[in-house]
Image (tube, rainbow, N blue to C red; front, top):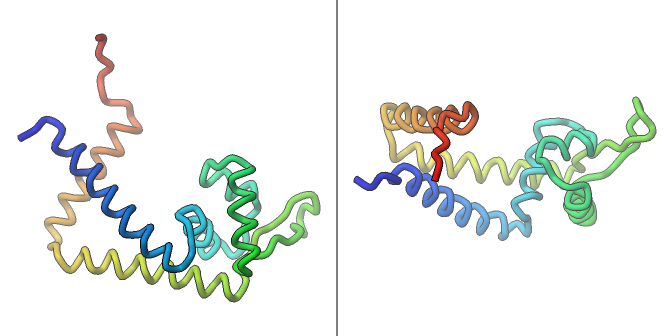
Length: 147
């Protein structure tokens, strides 16, 4: 068993998942970032640009381009924030709500197709691996070695 089997498997599954989902989103003429913003807005009825920027750790210019593209397609609007007229809120339009729902449905179908192929014990093992990755990466439990 190779010493990096877990890491190589995680990397490969990530590549396969990204490739598959990117192809699905491309059929909707959406980029990955646009999808993330649409999903965020579906969960939050309205959001400030600062909230979206913080959530995705995007440069302001990158987020502006994403919002411009989505607004030009009629998926969102930017409105003055009634609580702070110096800031803007981003809100999905009815067309944006439809596209966001389509994206979420696509993700549910993908997740469901995977779940059909595994049992509860498989899922529990998978979650254990994910928890271990989160623990190691967030708690810094990998020892720094001197070269």
